[in-house]
Amino acid sequence: MSDRLAGAGDFIGQTTRGTVGYAMAADALAVQYEAVTFGEVHRDVLGLVPTRPARILDVGAGTGRDAAALVALGHSVVAVEPTTELRVHGQRIHADSAIEWVDDVLPDLALSKCPGRFEAVFATAVWMHLDAEERKHAMARVAALLLPGGRFFVTLRHGPVPNGRHMFEVSAAETAELGATHALQTVFNGGRSDIHGRESVWWSSLVLQANNIRNARH
Image (tube, rainbow, N blue to C red):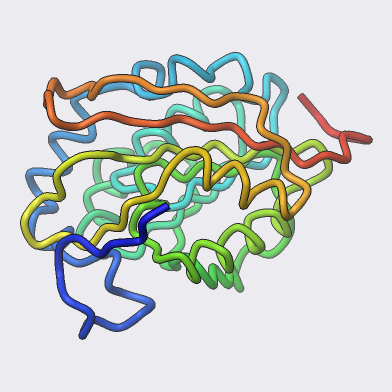
């Protein structure tokens, strides 16, 4: 799969370049993110979300739309968002939600203030911000964060890159293959059109499950 860079140039630091463009657009993005629901965005995989109370990690949580919905379902949610402006919007919009907000970023994702593993990890519209080497490192990190039987929910954006953003081309097939190298089995692989009606944008949605399902809670 091609790993051609689209968007901003290579001078940006490895740990921050994926967030380029989001701070400046945070006000508009907050409106866009909150205009759709968790159920609409993840409609194809809702049946794979834990049904009992679980510890869930939302990486690149944006304004916390998904995190808040998961908390409302009874889950304990750590929301990782490296862009301060988006995180502030999320803390304002979902002030009444028991979300644990964290300033952190893939691929390292230290999570020093909230150690431990999770029954589900979400990365919605995040993975394409990582280059090939970063994706390898990030997949290893996600696999290490999953409890036995835990699931990794990942969505990939395809199509033209917005001006000022930093994204790479990445396929569902590559993502599934990379997950398999870390004992993550693909239990869902599907595609859909853009929920915001952009004709040139489409999405892949995958759920990868840690192969050892003993003692998993679902």
